[in-house]
Length: 305
Image (cartoon, rainbow, N blue to C red; front, side, top):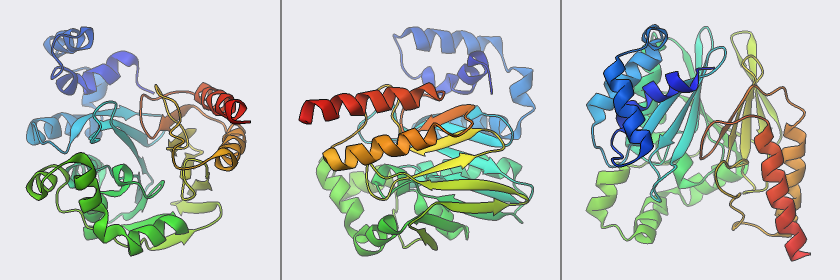
Protein backbone atom coordinates (compact mmCIF):
# COMPACT_ATOMS: atom_id res chain seq x y z
CA UNK A 1 0.00 0.00 0.00
CA UNK A 2 1.21 3.52 -0.63
CA UNK A 3 2.64 5.47 2.26
CA UNK A 4 0.66 8.47 3.56
CA UNK A 5 3.16 10.73 1.79
CA UNK A 6 2.59 9.03 -1.56
CA UNK A 7 -1.17 9.13 -1.11
CA UNK A 8 -1.03 12.84 -0.29
CA UNK A 9 0.98 13.51 -3.44
CA UNK A 10 -1.77 11.93 -5.52
CA UNK A 11 -4.42 14.14 -3.98
CA UNK A 12 -2.35 17.28 -3.72
CA UNK A 13 -4.07 19.24 -6.49
CA UNK A 14 -7.51 18.41 -5.08
CA UNK A 15 -6.43 19.21 -1.53
CA UNK A 16 -4.88 22.48 -2.56
CA UNK A 17 -8.35 23.66 -3.59
CA UNK A 18 -9.24 23.85 0.12
CA UNK A 19 -7.49 27.06 1.23
CA UNK A 20 -6.85 27.95 4.82
CA UNK A 21 -6.31 24.42 6.09
CA UNK A 22 -3.25 22.53 7.31
CA UNK A 23 -3.99 19.91 4.65
CA UNK A 24 -3.94 22.59 1.95
CA UNK A 25 -0.58 23.84 3.23
CA UNK A 26 0.87 20.32 3.19
CA UNK A 27 -0.48 19.80 -0.32
CA UNK A 28 1.15 23.00 -1.53
CA UNK A 29 4.49 21.92 -0.05
CA UNK A 30 4.22 18.52 -1.76
CA UNK A 31 3.56 20.19 -5.09
CA UNK A 32 6.78 22.15 -4.67
CA UNK A 33 8.67 18.94 -3.92
CA UNK A 34 7.84 17.63 -7.38
CA UNK A 35 6.76 14.14 -8.48
CA UNK A 36 7.74 11.14 -6.42
CA UNK A 37 9.55 8.43 -8.43
CA UNK A 38 7.42 5.53 -7.19
CA UNK A 39 4.20 7.27 -8.28
CA UNK A 40 5.71 8.15 -11.66
CA UNK A 41 6.21 4.46 -12.43
CA UNK A 42 2.53 3.59 -12.07
CA UNK A 43 0.41 4.45 -15.12
CA UNK A 44 -2.77 5.02 -13.08
CA UNK A 45 -1.05 7.45 -10.77
CA UNK A 46 0.41 9.34 -13.71
CA UNK A 47 -3.02 9.39 -15.38
CA UNK A 48 -4.62 10.68 -12.17
CA UNK A 49 -2.51 13.82 -12.39
CA UNK A 50 -3.45 14.46 -16.03
CA UNK A 51 -7.15 13.87 -15.33
CA UNK A 52 -7.05 16.35 -12.47
CA UNK A 53 -5.74 18.90 -14.96
CA UNK A 54 -8.30 17.99 -17.64
CA UNK A 55 -11.40 18.00 -15.46
CA UNK A 56 -10.48 21.16 -13.58
CA UNK A 57 -13.48 22.45 -11.66
CA UNK A 58 -16.18 20.14 -13.07
CA UNK A 59 -19.02 20.33 -10.53
CA UNK A 60 -19.73 16.60 -10.73
CA UNK A 61 -16.21 15.31 -10.07
CA UNK A 62 -15.44 16.12 -6.45
CA UNK A 63 -11.86 15.83 -5.20
CA UNK A 64 -10.79 12.30 -6.15
CA UNK A 65 -7.62 10.80 -4.71
CA UNK A 66 -6.18 7.62 -6.23
CA UNK A 67 -4.64 5.02 -3.91
CA UNK A 68 -2.57 2.09 -5.10
CA UNK A 69 -3.22 -0.91 -2.86
CA UNK A 70 -1.53 -4.32 -2.82
CA UNK A 71 -1.46 -6.47 -5.93
CA UNK A 72 -3.45 -4.97 -8.79
CA UNK A 73 -6.10 -3.22 -6.71
CA UNK A 74 -6.74 0.52 -6.55
CA UNK A 75 -9.13 2.70 -4.59
CA UNK A 76 -10.46 6.13 -5.50
CA UNK A 77 -11.74 8.23 -2.61
CA UNK A 78 -13.43 11.62 -2.60
CA UNK A 79 -15.54 11.44 -5.75
CA UNK A 80 -18.47 13.87 -5.94
CA UNK A 81 -21.35 13.65 -3.49
CA UNK A 82 -24.21 16.14 -3.39
CA UNK A 83 -23.77 16.54 0.38
CA UNK A 84 -20.11 17.51 0.01
CA UNK A 85 -17.22 15.91 1.91
CA UNK A 86 -16.06 13.21 2.36
CA UNK A 87 -17.45 12.15 -1.02
CA UNK A 88 -17.91 8.71 -2.58
CA UNK A 89 -15.38 5.89 -2.96
CA UNK A 90 -14.89 3.35 -5.74
CA UNK A 91 -12.44 0.61 -6.68
CA UNK A 92 -10.62 -0.92 -9.64
CA UNK A 93 -9.06 -4.40 -9.75
CA UNK A 94 -7.01 -5.62 -12.70
CA UNK A 95 -6.56 -9.17 -13.92
CA UNK A 96 -4.26 -10.22 -16.73
CA UNK A 97 -7.03 -9.75 -19.29
CA UNK A 98 -9.82 -8.29 -17.17
CA UNK A 99 -10.69 -5.17 -15.22
CA UNK A 100 -13.34 -4.92 -12.51
CA UNK A 101 -14.79 -1.65 -11.29
CA UNK A 102 -16.57 -1.45 -7.95
CA UNK A 103 -19.18 1.32 -8.06
CA UNK A 104 -19.20 4.23 -10.49
CA UNK A 105 -19.93 7.41 -8.55
CA UNK A 106 -22.80 9.89 -8.37
CA UNK A 107 -22.26 11.55 -11.74
CA UNK A 108 -21.35 10.77 -15.30
CA UNK A 109 -18.17 12.79 -14.75
CA UNK A 110 -17.21 10.48 -11.88
CA UNK A 111 -17.85 7.42 -14.02
CA UNK A 112 -15.81 8.88 -16.86
CA UNK A 113 -12.96 9.69 -14.46
CA UNK A 114 -12.86 6.07 -13.29
CA UNK A 115 -12.92 4.72 -16.85
CA UNK A 116 -10.25 7.07 -18.14
CA UNK A 117 -8.11 6.41 -15.08
CA UNK A 118 -8.19 2.64 -15.62
CA UNK A 119 -7.61 3.09 -19.36
CA UNK A 120 -4.00 3.91 -18.53
CA UNK A 121 -3.50 0.15 -18.04
CA UNK A 122 -6.04 -1.17 -20.55
CA UNK A 123 -5.38 -2.41 -24.09
CA UNK A 124 -9.03 -2.42 -25.18
CA UNK A 125 -9.27 -6.22 -25.27
CA UNK A 126 -10.09 -6.81 -21.61
CA UNK A 127 -13.25 -8.32 -20.21
CA UNK A 128 -14.76 -5.44 -18.23
CA UNK A 129 -17.08 -5.71 -15.23
CA UNK A 130 -18.85 -3.17 -13.05
CA UNK A 131 -20.13 -4.34 -9.65
CA UNK A 132 -22.70 -2.06 -8.00
CA UNK A 133 -22.60 -2.37 -4.22
CA UNK A 134 -26.22 -1.17 -4.02
CA UNK A 135 -28.76 0.97 -5.86
CA UNK A 136 -28.32 4.40 -4.24
CA UNK A 137 -27.59 7.30 -6.57
CA UNK A 138 -24.11 8.03 -5.24
CA UNK A 139 -22.96 4.56 -6.31
CA UNK A 140 -24.76 4.10 -9.65
CA UNK A 141 -25.20 7.41 -11.51
CA UNK A 142 -21.98 6.91 -13.51
CA UNK A 143 -23.37 3.62 -14.87
CA UNK A 144 -23.94 4.91 -18.42
CA UNK A 145 -20.20 5.25 -19.04
CA UNK A 146 -19.67 1.53 -18.41
CA UNK A 147 -22.78 0.44 -20.27
CA UNK A 148 -21.56 2.37 -23.32
CA UNK A 149 -18.18 0.60 -23.05
CA UNK A 150 -19.78 -2.85 -23.03
CA UNK A 151 -19.07 -3.72 -19.40
CA UNK A 152 -20.91 -6.63 -17.77
CA UNK A 153 -22.79 -5.05 -14.87
CA UNK A 154 -23.44 -7.03 -11.68
CA UNK A 155 -25.75 -6.15 -8.78
CA UNK A 156 -28.08 -7.63 -6.20
CA UNK A 157 -31.49 -8.52 -7.64
CA UNK A 158 -33.15 -5.87 -5.45
CA UNK A 159 -30.89 -3.22 -6.96
CA UNK A 160 -31.69 -4.61 -10.41
CA UNK A 161 -35.42 -4.25 -9.78
CA UNK A 162 -34.99 -0.67 -8.61
CA UNK A 163 -32.84 0.35 -11.57
CA UNK A 164 -35.33 -1.22 -13.97
CA UNK A 165 -38.55 0.04 -12.39
CA UNK A 166 -37.58 3.40 -10.92
CA UNK A 167 -34.26 4.31 -12.49
CA UNK A 168 -35.84 6.62 -15.04
CA UNK A 169 -37.13 8.94 -12.31
CA UNK A 170 -34.12 8.79 -10.02
CA UNK A 171 -32.18 11.76 -11.42
CA UNK A 172 -35.25 14.01 -11.19
CA UNK A 173 -35.85 12.79 -7.63
CA UNK A 174 -32.30 13.72 -6.58
CA UNK A 175 -32.51 17.10 -8.34
CA UNK A 176 -35.76 17.89 -6.54
CA UNK A 177 -34.34 16.79 -3.20
CA UNK A 178 -31.30 19.04 -3.69
CA UNK A 179 -33.34 21.98 -5.02
CA UNK A 180 -31.58 21.94 -8.40
CA UNK A 181 -33.13 23.11 -11.64
CA UNK A 182 -33.08 20.70 -14.56
CA UNK A 183 -30.18 22.66 -16.05
CA UNK A 184 -28.22 22.50 -12.79
CA UNK A 185 -28.83 18.76 -12.51
CA UNK A 186 -27.60 18.25 -16.07
CA UNK A 187 -24.48 20.29 -15.36
CA UNK A 188 -23.64 18.42 -12.15
CA UNK A 189 -24.89 14.89 -12.71
CA UNK A 190 -24.63 14.68 -16.48
CA UNK A 191 -26.73 12.52 -18.80
CA UNK A 192 -27.62 9.87 -16.23
CA UNK A 193 -29.05 6.72 -17.81
CA UNK A 194 -29.78 3.75 -15.55
CA UNK A 195 -30.63 0.25 -16.73
CA UNK A 196 -31.09 -3.29 -15.48
CA UNK A 197 -27.75 -5.01 -14.73
CA UNK A 198 -26.66 -8.04 -16.74
CA UNK A 199 -26.10 -10.33 -13.74
CA UNK A 200 -28.30 -10.11 -10.65
CA UNK A 201 -27.58 -12.17 -7.57
CA UNK A 202 -29.29 -13.08 -4.30
CA UNK A 203 -26.45 -15.09 -2.77
CA UNK A 204 -22.68 -14.79 -2.54
CA UNK A 205 -21.09 -14.96 -5.99
CA UNK A 206 -17.60 -15.75 -7.25
CA UNK A 207 -16.33 -13.79 -10.24
CA UNK A 208 -13.42 -15.48 -11.99
CA UNK A 209 -10.86 -13.14 -13.54
CA UNK A 210 -7.95 -14.78 -15.35
CA UNK A 211 -7.33 -17.56 -12.86
CA UNK A 212 -8.01 -15.41 -9.82
CA UNK A 213 -11.34 -14.75 -8.13
CA UNK A 214 -13.26 -11.89 -6.62
CA UNK A 215 -15.86 -12.73 -3.99
CA UNK A 216 -19.07 -10.74 -4.22
CA UNK A 217 -20.67 -10.98 -0.79
CA UNK A 218 -24.31 -10.25 0.00
CA UNK A 219 -24.22 -7.98 3.06
CA UNK A 220 -27.71 -6.56 3.79
CA UNK A 221 -28.25 -4.09 6.60
CA UNK A 222 -27.80 -0.60 5.20
CA UNK A 223 -30.21 -1.70 2.46
CA UNK A 224 -31.36 -5.10 1.26
CA UNK A 225 -29.37 -4.75 -1.98
CA UNK A 226 -25.99 -4.22 -0.28
CA UNK A 227 -22.95 -6.08 -1.62
CA UNK A 228 -19.30 -6.05 -0.61
CA UNK A 229 -16.47 -7.14 -2.90
CA UNK A 230 -13.44 -9.01 -1.56
CA UNK A 231 -10.21 -9.40 -3.52
CA UNK A 232 -8.30 -12.27 -1.86
CA UNK A 233 -5.15 -11.58 -3.88
CA UNK A 234 -4.64 -8.12 -2.38
CA UNK A 235 -6.61 -8.67 0.82
CA UNK A 236 -8.83 -5.70 -0.06
CA UNK A 237 -12.46 -5.34 0.95
CA UNK A 238 -14.52 -2.87 -1.07
CA UNK A 239 -17.29 -2.56 1.47
CA UNK A 240 -19.75 -0.14 -0.14
CA UNK A 241 -22.09 1.24 2.50
CA UNK A 242 -21.77 -1.84 4.67
CA UNK A 243 -19.03 0.21 6.36
CA UNK A 244 -18.62 3.91 7.14
CA UNK A 245 -15.46 5.73 8.15
CA UNK A 246 -15.47 9.06 9.97
CA UNK A 247 -19.24 8.96 10.49
CA UNK A 248 -21.82 6.61 12.03
CA UNK A 249 -23.46 3.95 9.84
CA UNK A 250 -26.43 5.38 7.92
CA UNK A 251 -29.34 3.48 9.44
CA UNK A 252 -32.30 5.52 8.20
CA UNK A 253 -33.34 2.89 5.65
CA UNK A 254 -34.16 0.24 8.24
CA UNK A 255 -34.95 -0.58 11.84
CA UNK A 256 -33.80 -2.96 14.56
CA UNK A 257 -34.27 -6.11 12.46
CA UNK A 258 -32.08 -4.71 9.67
CA UNK A 259 -29.45 -3.53 12.15
CA UNK A 260 -29.21 -6.99 13.74
CA UNK A 261 -28.69 -8.41 10.25
CA UNK A 262 -26.09 -5.74 9.55
CA UNK A 263 -24.09 -6.67 12.65
CA UNK A 264 -24.18 -10.35 11.68
CA UNK A 265 -22.86 -9.55 8.21
CA UNK A 266 -20.01 -7.45 9.60
CA UNK A 267 -19.09 -10.27 11.98
CA UNK A 268 -18.93 -12.54 8.92
CA UNK A 269 -16.58 -10.13 7.14
CA UNK A 270 -14.19 -10.31 10.10
CA UNK A 271 -13.31 -13.84 8.98
CA UNK A 272 -11.60 -12.47 5.86
CA UNK A 273 -7.88 -11.74 5.61
CA UNK A 274 -7.94 -7.99 5.29
CA UNK A 275 -4.99 -5.79 4.36
CA UNK A 276 -7.10 -2.78 3.36
CA UNK A 277 -10.73 -1.75 3.77
CA UNK A 278 -12.34 0.67 1.32
CA UNK A 279 -15.61 1.97 2.83
CA UNK A 280 -18.30 3.54 0.66
CA UNK A 281 -17.44 6.94 2.16
CA UNK A 282 -14.50 8.23 4.16
CA UNK A 283 -10.84 7.29 4.31
CA UNK A 284 -9.18 3.96 3.66
CA UNK A 285 -9.01 1.87 6.78
CA UNK A 286 -8.09 -1.48 8.28
CA UNK A 287 -10.11 -4.39 9.67
CA UNK A 288 -10.53 -2.34 12.86
CA UNK A 289 -13.28 -0.42 11.03
CA UNK A 290 -15.47 -3.53 11.25
CA UNK A 291 -15.40 -3.49 15.04
CA UNK A 292 -16.00 0.27 15.10
CA UNK A 293 -19.14 -0.06 12.97
CA UNK A 294 -20.34 -3.12 14.92
CA UNK A 295 -20.00 -1.20 18.19
CA UNK A 296 -21.92 1.78 16.81
CA UNK A 297 -24.74 -0.46 15.60
CA UNK A 298 -24.90 -2.35 18.89
CA UNK A 299 -25.13 0.91 20.82
CA UNK A 300 -28.02 1.93 18.59
CA UNK A 301 -29.74 -1.41 19.17
CA UNK A 302 -29.30 -1.07 22.90
CA UNK A 303 -31.01 2.31 22.80
CA UNK A 304 -34.06 0.96 20.93
CA UNK A 305 -34.48 -2.24 22.96
